[in-house]
Each structure stands twice: as C-alpha cells, then as structure tokens.
Image (tube, rainbow, N blue to C red; front, side):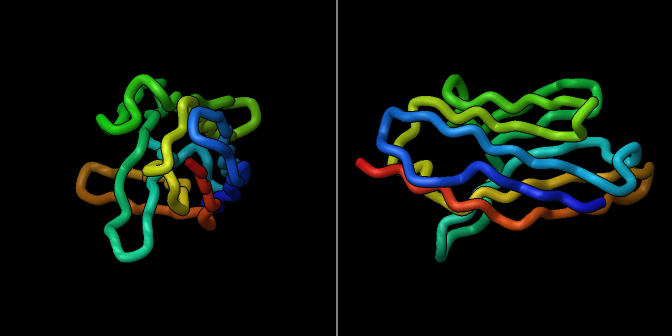
Length: 118
C-alpha cells in the first residue's frame, strides 16, 4: 500500500483546509484509514479514522470541526478541517491499516504541514 498525502498549508485561525490521501497498491486489503498529527517534541496523536464500512471516529479535540470521508472510486480519503485553531498546527500523516485475525500492519504517507496562524 502506498499513500500520497496533500493539501496542507498556511491558514488563519477560523479558516478551513482539506487534506487528501490517495491510496494505491493493495487497496482491497485496507481495513481502516485515518489521519494522525505530530508536533515536534510530542507524540503522534490520532485525529480521525474511517473504516472500510464507513464508520468514523474523531479525537475529542477535533470533534465537530473536522470531518473524515472517503471516495472509494478515487481510493482517496479526505480530512475537511473547519474552524481551525492555532493548536491544530502540526504535521498531518495519513495512515492505512490492514488487519488479520492475529496481527495488523500500518502504512504511512509522507506528512503534510498545516500551520494555523492566530
């Protein structure tokens, strides 16, 4: 599985951005896709997940502001980020997880930087 992320940039607080993550390769094996973010010196944290069945999960810090969605025809997952805050500034990483009954494997795209100015 290969992941190509895009869409980061600089935005003012209160603004919006949309991140995209295009998957290629063994796409049918992917069970869950998601976005994580990381600030220098801190651990990578989960932002949002979407399962192959369309179920979603959001971190409390982004609930109600961010929306994760997928376009199966384009093999792409999106993260719509609204009402952005300076604390949303981070490198955002796309993730795909394949799972079996006994193990799982994670794939990562390159990070895309989101900077929110106050």
